[in-house]
Image (cartoon, rainbow, N blue to C red; front, top):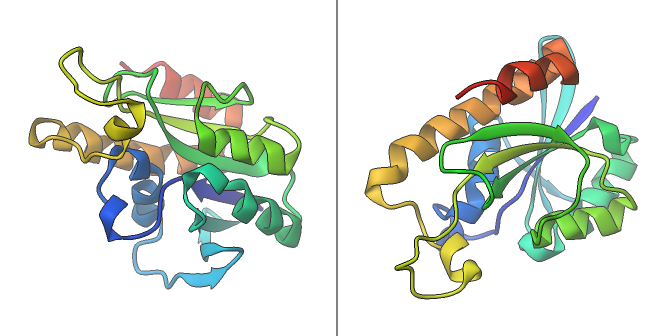
Length: 187
C-alpha cells in the first residue's frame, strides 16, 4: 500500500501555478476516478499493477500539508517509506524529474510541514523542476511559485506531469532503486 501525495494549494486561483504541479500529476494518475473528501483533503483509492494506492491532495494550503498527510498515513497504516510525495522543486531546471528518498526540505514549506507531522523526512519524493526565477523577475520566491507557467514553458510542464505519473508507476511496479536508476539518469 502506497500513499501518493501531490502538493499544491486548493482553489481555482492556484490551479495552474508552478506550486500546484503535484496536484496535476495526481490528476494524471486518477483519470476517471472520483475524489472523496477526508483528511482535510481529497483522496482517491486506485489500483495500479495489482498494488493498492491512495492518492491524496491536501486542501490545507501548501504550508500546512502535513495536517492532511499525517492523519491519512495513520488511517491507512502507511509507513513514511511508503509515502510518495510529488512536488515542485526550485533547485531543478524546468522539465527535470528526479526521485529521492529522504532529505531536507530545502526551504519548501510543504515538505517542512510533512516532516513535522510524520516526525521524519524519510519519505519518497518525486521532485519536479520548475527552475528559479530569472534575474529580471520582479517579486519574491512566493510570487514566482504562485504564478502559472508562461506559454513557452507549458509543454515542458505538461511532459513533466506525465513523467511524474510514470515515475509513480515505476516505483510501484519495479521498486524504488530501479525507479531511481531509470528516472534520475534521464537527461
